Image (tube, rainbow, N blue to C red; front, side, top):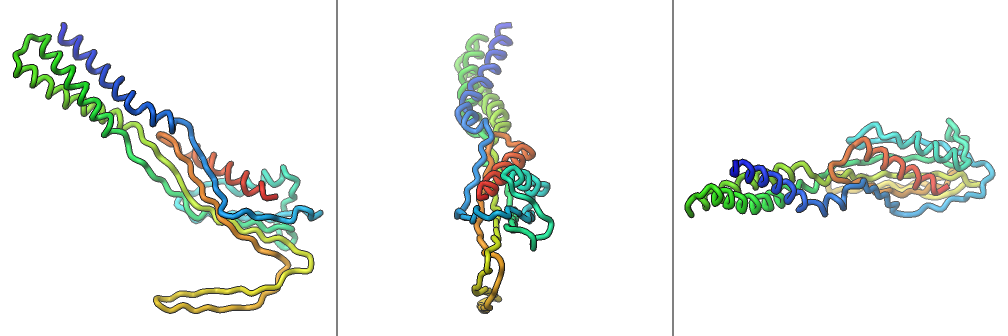
Length: 244
């Protein structure tokens, strides 16, 4: 009976102790943290009386079903921007491409919790053998067995705790209608092997073109993809709409 009681206390202690070993990292990443960083700010002419926009969002990433276009349209409408279906009738042509969204894992905590469990297991294994009136050899064996069991138990617990993230890049281009139009040059560089061909042509357009990109990241312990997409979408829409 004493042996069973000690084994029960050992099992509880291993899980409590190894859990405490990971508590700090778990707390740091328990809440979903989402960050969106725009590479360069775009300054638009907001004095236009005709505040109309044409919005188009593409997605060439591996993660589909990201509702950035409807979210962005909703926020623009709240800012008093009227949406149009024909880009020729728009004050601003807003185009974005979700270029990439990649999953990554910083690794589980099985290593550190396994080591902690091994230490606790060795201690309780020795105590268990002592209570059962084993000799020195029996105590050593009990400690070794307890260490192995503790390592396995701690590693199993730590494997359940993973810090995961989704990170990616969104390209953004905004064309703004300019009274009188703009003139400029379009330069294209075409590379084939060791040869690069550069071409130029004069252009005239009713729109001034601005380009930038946004880096996004969502990180949390045992992250949920749907929740991460919702947070990333909301923050991207807020930042882009914030330019208007």
